[in-house]
Every structure is written in C-alpha cells, then in structure tokens.
Image (cartoon, rainbow, N blue to C red; front, side, top):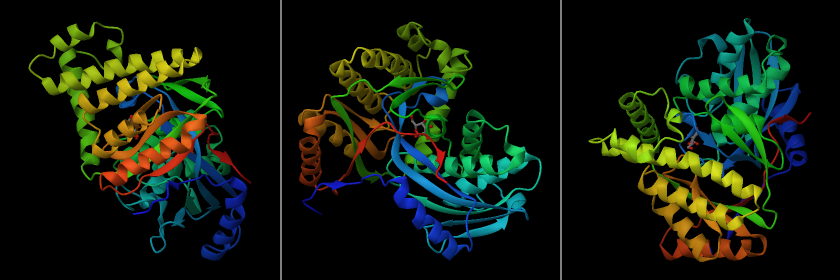
Length: 398
Ligand code: GLA
C-alpha cells in the first residue's frame, strides 16, 4: 500500500529506440532492419458492440508496444520480449499452430504465420519486443503487440506490399482468435493500426469503415483508472457473452444484432420472451449502439455534460444488463463521479481492467487522489492512473 497516487506515464519514442537497438544487439546480435511501434487504446463508448456489427469510439493511447525486427531468409522466427526474460521462443514458422507457441509469443507467431501464408513464400524474422502498454489493464496491450509486429513485416517483406492497414487489422484479429485463442472482436486492432492523431475513431464494425471524430472537449481530460483487478473468469465470460448474442440472433432470425438498429427495442425483447439472459444482453447492445451515435453528436456540440451522462448510462448498462463489471470498476466510476467527474465508465472487456473518467482539466489531480483514497478505504490495492490523449496509430520509428 502506498499513500502516493501512482501514475503510469507514456514513454517517448525517442527514449525507447536507442535502448531497444542496444538490447537487440545484445540479445539477438547485430542490427534490426527497423523499429516499429503500435499503441494501446481506450474506448470512449461502444462496449461489446464490435462482434455484434455495431459501433464503437476508441482512441489510440500514447502508450505503445515497440518491436525491433530483422527479417531472415530461413523461414524461422525468433521472438524475445524485454518483459519476459527467459521466455524467448525460436522455431519454424510453418510449424506454428493454435496455442503452440503459447503465452505472449502466440500473438506475434500467429501474425507471422498468417502473413507467411499471405506472402505465398517463406517469411522469417528476429523480433525483440518492448511493451509499454500496461498489461492486464484492459488497454489492449495484446493488440499493440500483434499490430506492431504485423506492420513491421508488412513493410519489410516485398510479397506483402499490397496488404493495407485494414487487411492487416483483420490479420491481427485472426492471429488472436485462431492462434492465441482470444475471441476478440476487432476494435482494438483497428484503432491500433488505423487511429488518427488528435481524434477518436468512430468504427462501424459492420464493415470496419471509419469516421475520425475530432476531440472537441478541449477543457476536459480523460483520466484512466487501472484498477489492477483481473478476475480469472474473464476469458470464458467474454466467449459466453458472444455466444449468447449469437443465440439471440438465431432466435430473432438475423445475421447480426446490427440489423436491429433502429428497431422497436420492446418489440425485439418481446420476441426473446423466456430467454431473460438474451433479453438483457440484446438490450445492452441495442442501447449501446444508440449511445455511441448520441455521444458523437454531443462531442460535436462540445456538450461535456451530455457526454458524461452517456458514459454513465453505458456503465450502468454494462453492469446490469451485460453483467461484465465488477466491484473495482463500479468503485472507480462511483468515486470519480463523487469527486466531480462529468462522467465515468468501464472501458474494454470488463471483469477488471480500467475505467475512464471525463474530468475538467484543472480537476485531474483531485479526482485521481479521491479515487486512490476510495480504493485504499475499501482495502483494495491502489489503482494506477494515466492520462489519455488521442494519439498516433502504429508507425515506423526508423
Ligand atoms: C475486448 C475485445 C474487443 C471488444 C471489447 C469490448 O477489448 O478485445 O474486441 O469486444 O473487449 O468492447
């Protein structure tokens, strides 16, 4: 326990790069062909809508995962992480399978395996990773990992020159779904690769078309509260939410809940009578889609109060209808609101991870301190705080 509010600042690209090149020389040998970075994200609103063909509104963080990469001609992959000493992996790319290799390497190996198929010839690489997105915080450190490696290979391997960022995002989704065994829906990889600096990204997950939305609440900051809670039921619960939505689609005779946007919600729920669980999940998804579009409109009006109201409504829906919140997230939201935040909500998949608070610029320190105190008063470990500003997508440093 500590009395100090603990901040997790982003590290500047210029600070990381020389260090990473030196580590590459030491741990792998020689120089990389280049260094790439891909960001983590927060999602302002639109949770558990991506795999239902709906809308979400993420933006890229300045916290990034870095990788130094050198291609090799022998179709082998060597992957080393500065955060996982002793867990380096080396093997044949055409032997990479679901769960083998496992752990953090699966996110990189899956991408390399899929891109090798796409290139139609052997692809091999030496990759050194340095992850600066907090892990387990619901801020998409895994997408930052897969996207940084994917962009590096797409830019280095001549046979991948035609792969654009939209396709690359889908490659990363497949790597996570098919190789790492994470049923992720596409929002995280899309924003990591296709974010627009200074903007939130309205993602239409029906076809992954994008509308950059300027961040028009200049007097306000997004404070991220990493609760440092991770409930182990999370992974199975995510897949369970997806399958309940699929069951609801079958009962309703639609391919995706997106088809019901604008429909009479009570009438739709009436058709799910007898399946209370599906009713609650569908009510969340349909109402959340509407909230995303309303929040974009409120941003256009620079209406911080309405943005805050919609964030709170989203949290309540995720807590009560989608049932993916937890004690720590509810406490973070409640404490931030009591300390004067215009709005607050959980962000990401849930069951731990982070909450967001929309806070007037001059109040950031006070709200952070109040949330910190509230956690200690409940006997919980101190949260980590970070300030989120809409930042650049994945890019090459050198
Ligand atoms: C996780 C997944 C995303 C999305 C969110 C919930 O972050 O990776 O695809 O489904 O949960 O909105």
